[in-house]
Structures are given as C-alpha cells and as structure tokens.
Image (cartoon, rainbow over all chains, first blue to last red; front, side):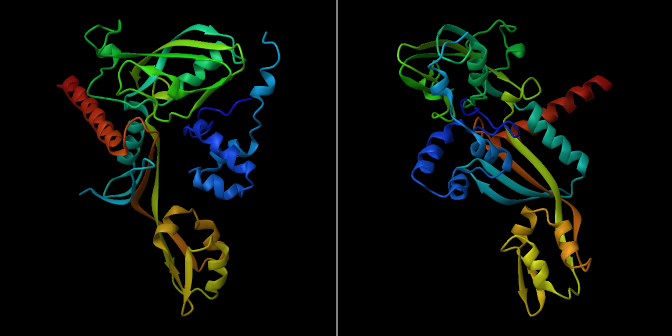
Length: 65
Length: 261
C-alpha cells in the first residue's frame, strides 16, 4: 500500500527515503548502491524496500468502506 | 576500572560505537535496557481527526503519525505524570501540532505546524499518506514525553552489544582459503600468515566460517570486553541518549537505596 513509517523489525525510520529510492530506481541505478547510500544496512530495512509495491494511488481511486 | 574507547562517532547519521572494558554482562545489559526502556522522548500520543476522506482509515493514519520521531527538548518538558498539572496537560508537558492539507498532494511530516519550534519532525520527508483531488486531511495532534517501556515509538534508538572477538591464529596451513571464505578485506595473507583487519573482524560474526575454513586451526575467541553499537532515531543525539539513560538508572538506584534504609 504505502511504505511503512518505520522498519517492522528494527524500527528505524524509513518512509522519508522511499521517494529518492523510487526516483533513482527509475533512472536505472544499481539497487545495492542505492540501498547502501540511503544508509540501509540491515537486511530487515532492505527487505522492505525490495519487496514494496506502492499501490496507494491505485487503491485511492476506489471507494472506501 | 571501567574504560571506554570510541570506535566510531558519526554525528551526521546519529551513530556511535564504542568498546567497553572492565564491565560485566549484567552492567552492559542494564545499560542497554535502560536506553531502550527509560529514556524519555517526544512522540504524538493523541489525535483529533477533524476531516479525513483519504484512502487510509483514521486508525491507520493515527498509527503512522505516532511513529514520526520528533526532536526532543528534555529540559523544557516533563513527563505528564510527574508534571505540576498532575497529568491534566499543560504547556510544560505537552505540545500541540496541527496539520491541514488539501489534495492532490502527498502529506509529509513537515506539513505539521508545531506550537514549539523546538519540537518538530526529525525527518521532514516522512510520508503520511497521499491525497487525490477533493480529498482533505485535517488533524490536531498532541505530543507528549514518553518512554520505550510504554510504546516503542518513544524508544530513542537501536542499541546492541556483543563480546569483542579476538583472532587466535597459530599455524594455519592454507591461509588463502580462510581469507577467501570471509568477506573481502577482512584478511590479508602476508608471508603465508593471516593478517586481520581488526575493525572489519569486529563488525562481522565470522567465528564459524573461520573455524570451518581452517579446519579448526584458527579460532575466534570472545573476550570480556563489549562492543556497543548505538543508532539514534534522531530525537536525541547518541551522547544525550546515553547520558539520560545513566541518569535514570542512577535515580532508580537512589530510589531503591531510600527504600531499604
């Protein structure tokens, strides 16, 4: 849906890093380099970025119940 | 005698690591738990949602807002239970923040307007939600001091320690094999002997790898020294966090001392 505010596991704040991650991924930069430079060291935080699908904008076009 | 040797002090990324010598594991663990449980920081606790027709439910938004780390001014605020107002809420134990965003927009933590310029989100770019055209979000929030034992949103950072490893390599028959089994840069082979990069050796956990690759000829042994790693989430600096942790630990001991008299 939307990137979590903090890492599920270590509670490091991460949601402010997602926009620059997305932008740099679209430019075609290497994933490992981007994650390292964003300061994501542990695999718990990295996994969130690797597995995240940003569907909030798609979902918000539908009705909320 | 206890001594401390700073390994890395990265003020920009709020990281600190040090070697603690001459302490036992009971002390090391109480220091760790004191940081996680007893250091007060600011976080948003109560919300009044005036308007929310975004796609995320009120509860979801409240949860996300609670997790925003806020810069903390420990001298200016009291924990509300210990405050003069006896938990009712006054200017010296809580701060009001307001947010009003109209779509289409992304709502960031920086959209919060705080009554006190010292209390503001540490990371302005944290995304709360996204709004489409016609959607609105209007919130009045109250931030209070709290501790990690109440909720982990008040925890000041991430702290862990381990025993400092020391390499015991006598006669290793094939040092190249050991060097290759480890991450690059940990070992160099000079004149048929293993030379370790101490900083990297402390960083990784290589006891099993080294023992296996050398058929038990080289071993990692644990010493009684502790390496501490502290990563602050930005509410307080690493030093302030440690100072406050020892202060609260001390006040607990003093309280206990009074009780047994």
